[in-house]
Image (tube, rainbow, N blue to C red; front, side):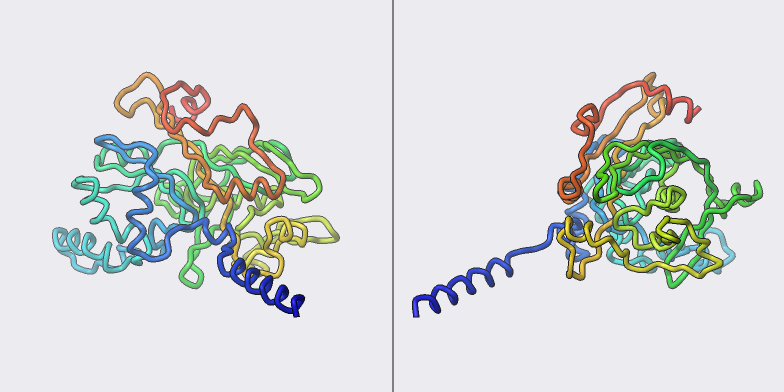
Length: 354
């Protein structure tokens, strides 16, 4: 009888423990309802002054609904009416789960007349997100080179760099990016094709699990450049559910497969057994968030006509550090992620900007 009572007692405690347990990756995005979005973003401010505000965006928080195209919403030929329709359609045609939808609340909270996006992190990655109320500054920052991203992957080379051309196509109400190798100057000028340079260096490696912590430097954050760049290394990002399956194992060797020719589309990422065990994902239906974080960027000296470059930095979120610990990876000691804002001269980025 005592044995039975102890068994029941332990069973109750085990059940209660299970009820309290929430997988750490499920807590990566703290927003549960659209009404919580504004508060969450405003609680993650890196820097704020009279012209610019810098946030540290959690992963999976949607910045805008990419499928919304205001050009298709405007049919009136009168220019003034057209502009008014464009402004009104911003809210009516965007999802309530996006920052774009809540712009009036942000303007009200900041007491700003305008709320222009500048450096905009895509929806899936986490990291720096920058807005301004100054239209001229908005245009200047949009063309600025930046330093971006730290993620876990399996690189073929410890260091490498490539210049890339990328175009996008709409599939099932989602834009997918594709690397191309030739484009006309008009296509680039008109925005149908984006170009950018990505460079990486490997910071830490786990040879047993075949994973790595990698730092990227890029001249653009748009159109999933880093995700596509990783496919060149035959090393999809951890949590990349859009492009990971463009790399296939052929005879035990990872190879990039033409996604258009073979009709490859997004699917939930399949991780190796050992990685799933390390992340406590084995037997669980959890979609791992994208482990790509826009860590820092440099604002050029033309901002406020400063002699130095303004440097903003955002630490990765706790889930990112726990993943590193579980995969036995770590940041180098010389890499300081504790200074959110500073002024310094970075010759490499100064050359890229000028």
